[in-house]
Image 1 (cartoon, rainbow, N blue to C red):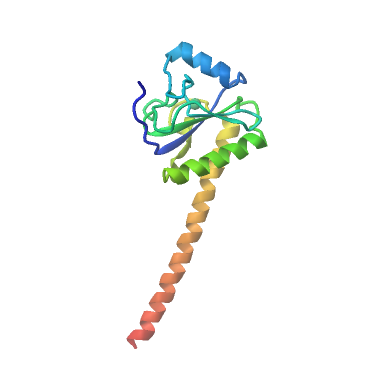
Image 2: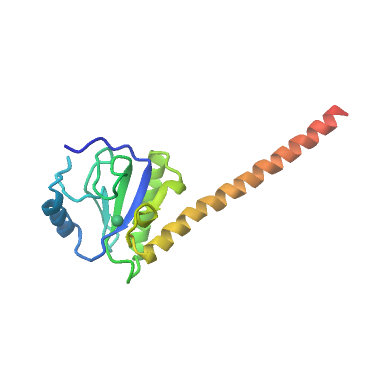
Length: 168
Ligand SMILES: [Zn+2]
């Protein structure tokens, strides 16, 4: 029986090959025989093929089998391909982006908790070409936060000016 999973991280993986959902599911069945309530064996919660089509292998609240130490506190998302030697497709990135947005809103996960597998464990996964996309995606949020901080600082400055006037 899978344990309860409470998503605090979104962890991005690559397949490392181009076998597709069915074959990876079968490979994981042979390896772990760890069935989900959806009837799949794949260790990831989501799998995105090159066409952009996504598959759900496990319910969000079910334990995954993708990142040691994080399987009861994350969603594992795998993209088809080997991004050490190829690039994700536009369709894949669009689906990935939408999935990250949906899940980060649903579970209140900040971009700092959206990670490539290799940012947590010593592995090549999700491949340098997808990892660079993930790092850029994390940065966009930091830029946004920095802008928000500047706006708040400016408001405080204005408020302090008003207070000075008030005291006189
Ligand atoms: Zn991985």
